[in-house]
Amino acid sequence: MVSRVIPVEPFDLVVFGATGDLAQRKILPALFRRYCAGQIPTGTRIIGAARSAHSPDEYRINLAQSLEKNLTASTFDPKDLAKFLELVSYVPLDGSGETGWSTLCEALSGAGTDRVQVFYFSVGPGLFGPLAERLHSYGLTNGATRIVVEKPFGHDLETARELNRTLASHFDEGQIYRIDHYLGKETVQNLMAVRFGNMLFEPLWNSQYVDHIQITVAETVGVLGREDYYERSGAMRDMMQNHLMQLLCLIAMEPPAKFDPDAVRDEKLKVIRALDPVEPYHIVRGQYAPASGAVGRDLNYRETVRNQRTRTESYIALKAHISNWRWAGTPFYLRTGKRLKARSSVINVMFKDAPHSIFGEEAGRHANHLKIRLQPNEGITLSVTIKEPGPGGMRLMDVPLDMSFAEALGPKGGDPADAYERLIMDVVRGNQTLFMRGDEVEAAWAWTDPIIADWEARGDVPKPYESGSTGPGDADLLLRRDTREWRGINP
Image (cartoon, rainbow, N blue to C red; front, side, top):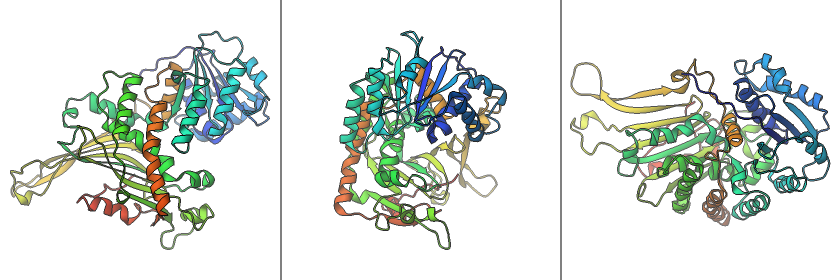
């Protein structure tokens, strides 16, 4: 199966923070791959902007080396590199000062009022306001201007509101693209296709048939290199408030009237607003520590951040409830953490047992289970119950109906597009479906802030867990109290 590539009209894209890690690892490689796929036409202008005093030629040389480093052999096409670099230029620029802005104006000159201009804020949130202000004061905006802002979208509800006000003073909501790369993953989008495109699932997608849902985002890496940021944020702000919240919304939302940006985001917002407050005994916080005999600074969170008394969590698990007709009484168990057993992002939909077994107690308990693998090895597995082969009576067993995207859609489908490829091209096309709206961000913080305030008031100390484990033991108790168990964390 070969995916269709629909080229866009020539556009301008300015990457602020173009020498930074995110731009080098994700944004520019994504643009290069879209160019190789034939989606970015000649006439497009890609301009890097940062404080580093590079000439355009020096920047192109560095970018070529970076692309070769950050792309695999199968996705790096040297014959297209020279042509792609012809689209790229660079402007030394001070985002909070006046240096370089006149040069940027000159580089963008000649564009018509209907030409799409994308300004990607690959910088810290402190520069969002100054960049937005200067874009307007230097006349670098038109009706087709879009800005892309990376998380964090604030540190709490108050700062999120202030950030939204700052951006809204210069841009309409329809011009602001708050990017969460999780929403660009192929399987995340397939959540909507599986639910709303198959009559098989949607009638069962409610508390009558679903026992509970587990959402797991596990990482093997620690926080080395991001110590200062992580100490200010922790797992709750860094992952739970945005990535896992978005997955929860997609798995729990009502069918939108149509596949339209605002219709989809309206339904996601309803989920967030229907979330009950989380009781303290339904939350487990953890901090990674070295496994027995293990050596290495980043195996111990407290040593990594150089604070032996830190109370910042590198792991969090919680039990959430959604108070609406579809999900009343169905628990959602969410967990995420650093230095866990494997890198794995999975949604497990656990269906209830059959109301009555005709096979007797010796057949055991069997229930259907839908496993949606977001990374790695993207795919979907449905566990069904069948008779165990062989004579000797009716013995039941569970077997998977497995669809791996790599197998089902390749090799003719090629390598799946990276999330940033899809999201950046959605910005160019003006499609906000996979981007968060301002009221959605604020609603998520309104639910998160009381949870954080409560454990700070109680002086809660995260539970230690061994690096390479599945997290603190108290997280297992969170489910065992409900006679349930976490699904394994597997690559």
